[in-house]
Length: 567
Image (cartoon, rainbow, N blue to C red; front, side):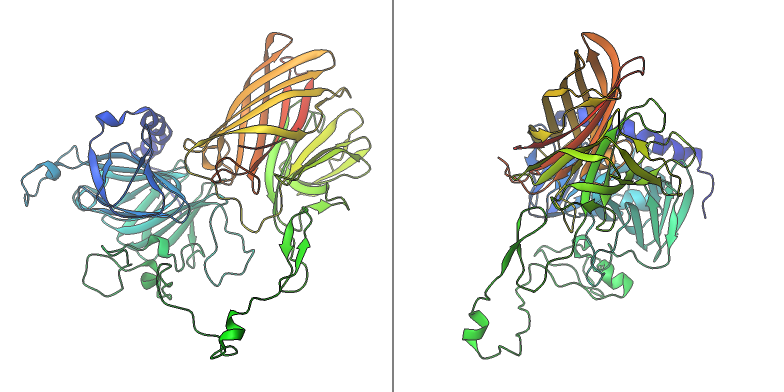
């Protein structure tokens, strides 16, 4: 399937990160027109300084970052005639766009070596029908993503970047996982995808998936569930209605037509659902409200029990830190989404078991099942606003079994394992696509070191920049007579290193000062969570974070957990 990547494709892919950085700093005053908005619904903006709301007829500039909010869509008509449909909760960068004919006499056919069309899909998904650049100069057309670059030969195709934020298509069983990564679907023409691992040709009617971890392209035998009946990627006409298959207008058929699947009803349609035969003709029965039955779930939140029986457990995001483990003097923090059968709670809903990453310091390292074992769950806490829980396992032996069956259980007599657990959820929180939120510390564990000492978390700050998908963390710790101050930065979702689901983040503390001396280092990771009060309802209400620091000599490791709220 895969072949060695060409030098041209490799250079394209290698330029992606550098281009993102340059675009972020580019000034809109130097930008040229790239196209215009032909359809916009909901919250659609261009991330300029300051951000600009986009509506039908507005100009799109080179270097614009087009951002769509939740339940928002946009369609662009580019200067070479290309069409781009952008899904909700997406971020698309117009990195380059120049076309000689746009400045020539109307009707003239002009090509130029300077023609170029480069888009960067940072988050979400888009569908595009290429214009003159793709038809005349396909080598000058690219769509860059976090896992590789797509080139074309005149085509109609869609790409979708899933990072814990892809919803299921109608008819797909609830709970069916949609693996994170890039999905590519070609309706017409040919797409060539390439990265540092392989290059693959994708023909019309084919589907390819590229996972974040291996980055190895995989052909799919059937359409992925995230594309079936995806009305978000249908092109619309001037009235805002998706074009129908088989018409002669310039709005192509939706994905459902290409797949032979049923077209989803337009969410804005005024059509009413069929009447329930049991209430047909009986207005009093149809309008009478049902008597609801309320209850309390495992997070202490009200739930609707009207359908009968308690709801099934849902997923939780769990972050943990500790160190050193497995006789290795290293700091470590990791976060993972746990399915209902991967975590365990005690009678107080505190975490007694979970599935997560384990420091890869030995052959066989990777993910593991963690259980409290004979250790005690101490300093457990709960914040009713964010619905976050935290604690640390201390004393005794925690059971840790790697996925290959290796037993790496840890004696916690001289150290602790710190954790934060999110509320349960069926779908991961959807993050905003712009704005900066400063979170306040609402709870956490006492920091501990690997010599059995317990300290004090004097203060901690956490800031999230959702436009740039970046986070900042600071800590002020007093432990064993020493003062530790840490400041670090990290990324969210696909901007993290390594890439994580959209509502998770990770980073490193590049500046750790111990008793006034610089030289330490550290790491942190965590998740964004709902619900929780917020000054801006668009921001997630809570943040769970775990951290692990180490001195320059590698002799002392300090770990802990913190919960944040009130953005």
